[in-house]
Image 1 (tube, helix red, strand yellow):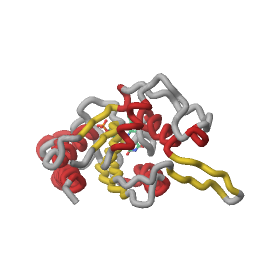
Image 2 (cartoon, helix red, strand yellow):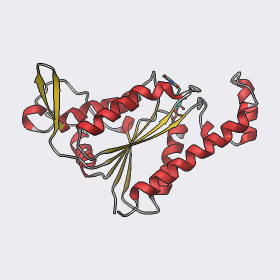
Image 3 (cartoon, protein in one colour):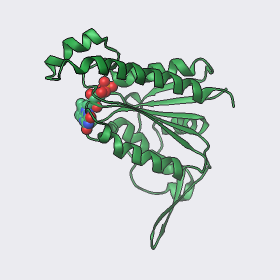
Image 4 (tube, helix red, strand yellow):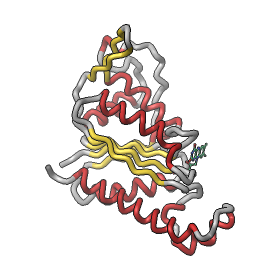
Length: 221
Ligand SMILES: Cc1cc2nc3c(=O)[nH]c(=O)nc-3n(C[C@H](O)[C@H](O)[C@H](O)COP(=O)(O)O)c2cc1C
């Protein structure tokens, strides 16, 4: 049975990101009971202090926070989900804090032409990005996608990346609002009411994609 770990960068309770996660989880539940959802802001994760001792000791040297337990769960997961609202073209601070501690999963060698990263363990995982953003186009998510394209390669030869982006989602629970609710909302946001019909369909498609990806990634090989 596949193990799923969801690292949730939400700062708002039951916002759009949470709804994307819910749908992904429902799909995954068809195939597995091993799904863990971790809200990053509730964890005690100290900032990476840049000591780089991980390069020698093959683990993070910081002790006395939740990283040791979390890093074990990360190592064991087959499907690693990073879910976040886009904040200033990036993931939220609690999730970024966790990502910085990923430094301890790789050996880094400085060369004359750049850095060579070698993972301590050659992971074979599905990385999933569930991203929610207010902007009407998805370019604000690109820095996060670029990072994960790189991360999945640095952490092993066989990792795969799957990305789902929800755009024009500024208001809480907007992704699951009905067409009528969107029609009522859009003038308040100074958006053309005519967008509501297509946006409703777009949002439904996104939620379906989350469900289907959750199901597909947990299916037996
Ligand atoms: C501090 C802050 C920064 C944001 N920065 C961006 C941004 O750079 N690009 C964007 O498209 N949306 C941005 N947004 C909008 C959120 O990404 C959007 O409302 C998202 O759907 C919120 O997700 P949630 O409902 O899960 O909280 C920002 C929101 C906040 C509060």
